[in-house]
View 1: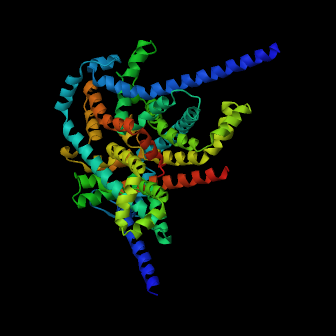
View 2: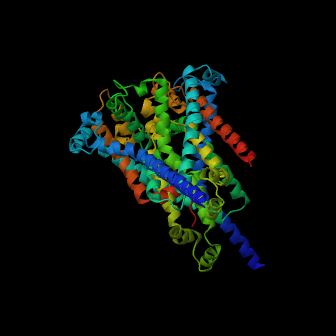
Amino acid sequence: MTDMKRKNAALRAKKRMIKALQYIFLILVSLLSIFPLYYMACAATNKSVDVIRGKLIPGNYLIENFKSLLAAQNVGGAMINSFKYAIVLTLVSLLICSIAGYGFEIYHNKRKDFVFSMILLAMMVPFAATLIPLFQMFSRANLLNTTLGFILPSISTPFLIMMFRQSARSFPHDLIEAARIDGVSEVGIFFRMFFPTMRSTYAAAMTITFMNAWNNYLWPKVIMMDEKSITMPMLIANLTAGYLTDYGSLMLGVFLCTIPTVIIFFLLQNSFANGITGAVKG
Amino acid sequence: MDGRKKSFTLAKKHDLTGWAFLVPAVMLIIAMNFLPMVQALILSLKTGVGANLRWGGATNYIRMFQDKVFLQSLVNNFIYLIIQVPIMLTLALVLASLLNNKDLRFKGLFRTAIFLPCATSLVSYAIIFRSLFSVDGFINTVLIKFGLLDTGYNFLGHAVSARIVIIIALVWRWTGYNMVFYLAALQNIDYSVYEAAKIDGASPLQTFRKITAPLLKPTILLTTIISTNGTLQLFDESVNLTNGGPANATITMSHYIYNISFKYVPNFGYSAAMSYLILILVAVLAFIQMRVGDKRD
C-alpha cells in the first residue's frame, strides 16, 4: 500500500517536472521571439554608444535619432510610397482574385476546372525565374518607378484565387437561385451577397496581401531606380550602406518599417494566421 | 421548345459570365508568370552583355557549372536547406503540439509571442540580426561582459559563423509561421484521441510519435515544400544580413543572379540560365518530396 502511494507520488512529481519543463521551454522560446524586436525598440530610443554598450532599457534619445534619420533619408516619402503601393495592390488584388475565385467555383465546368489547375502551376514558379523578362518588359513599357509597375506582377496570385474559390464553395447555391429569380444580376449577386458574407476571407486575404506587399524587397529594388519612388525596406537597407553605423537612427528606421505590419498583426492576428494557411471557410 | 431555348441561353449566359469573372486574373497570371517564364528560357539560350545578344545554345548552362561563385551560392542554398529547414520544422512541430494542450495556461500569449516574428519585414529582421551580431553588437557585448570573450568576435566575418547567424535568423523568423500551419491542422484532430491516449498512460513523446506526427503528415509535407521553395529563393537575408560575405561564403543564388543582372554589367542571358536552374530545382525537389510523402503511408 505504502509502496503504491510512493510510486504514485513519484509519478506525480515526474508529471509536475515535465509540466514545469514545458512552461520553461515555452517561456524561453517566447522571450527569444520577442527579444530582437524589443532590442530594436530600445535601440531606437537610445544613443548609438549606449546601444553598443548593450543598454536594454528605453532611453530618451528618440527625438535626436529621429532628427538624424530625417537628415539622412527621406523617410516621409518612402513611408508614403510603401503605404501607397501596399494599399493599392491590396485593393486591386482582392477585387481581381475574389471575383476570379468566385467565378471558378460558382460557374465551374470542365474547361474552367482545367484552367484552374493550370493556374495552380504558377505557384511553383520562383520569382527569380521571371524577374529578368519582367524587368525588360516593364522598362520597355515605361513602368519603372511607378505604382502600376510595383503592383502588376503580384495582383493575381493562385493562392488568393484558391482561397476565394474555397470560400465560394460554402456559399449556398439556393441563395444565388433565389436572387436570380428576384432579378438580381450576376455581378450584383457577387457584390451585394457574396462580398458582405465573406468578410473573414477578405480580412485574411487583406492582411496577407498587405504584409507581402509591404515586405516586398527584390522587385522594388529592381524597378524603383528613382530615389523618390523607394519603399521603406529599401530605405532602411540604404541606411546600412555607410561605413559608420549610427545604431540609434538605424534602429529607428527599422522600427518605422516594422511598426505598420506589427500593428496589423496585433489587430488581426487570427486573420493573418488564416491568410497564411489559406484556411478560412465562409 | 421556347422554355428549353431560354434555359440553354441562360446556361450559356452563366458560362460566359463565369469566364468574364475569371479572365482578368487568368490573363495576369499568364502575362506575369507563364510568359516571362518562356521568355527566360529563350533568354537563357542567348549570350552577350547588355542588349547585345546572340544565340549561344547551352553556353550559359555550361558556364554556370564552371562559375565558382555560382557553385558556391548553390552550395550555400543547400546548406541552409538541409540544416535550417529540419531544425525549424521540428521546432515548429514541437511548439504546436505543446500549445495544443488544453490544460496549458497563457496559451494565447505564447502563441502570439512565437508568431510575432512573422510580422517583421525581411529586411528589418536581417538588419536587426546584423546589428546584434556585429563586432560591436549586443551579442559580443554580452559575451565580453560575462568574460567569455576578450574582444568582439567578427561573427559575420567568418564563413561558418556567418552561415550560423543566417540560419539562426531564419529559424527566428519562420518557426512561428510554420507553427501556425501545424496548429491549424491540430485543431482538426479530435481532442478526445489525446484524452484517450492519456488515460492509456501514453507519454507525451509517445503521443507525439504515434498520433500527432502521422495525422499531420500532409501538413508536414506542405510546409516542407513551402520552406524548400522559400529557401531556394532566399534573397533579402543574404543581401542585408551578410551582403553575401565574407568572400561569397553566404551568398544565395538569387543574390548572385541579382548581382549579375543589376549590379555589374548586365548579362541577362546568363542570369536567366541560373534562374532556370532554381526553377528546375524547385520543381524536382517538390516532386521528390511529394513522392516520399506518399510512400510513407
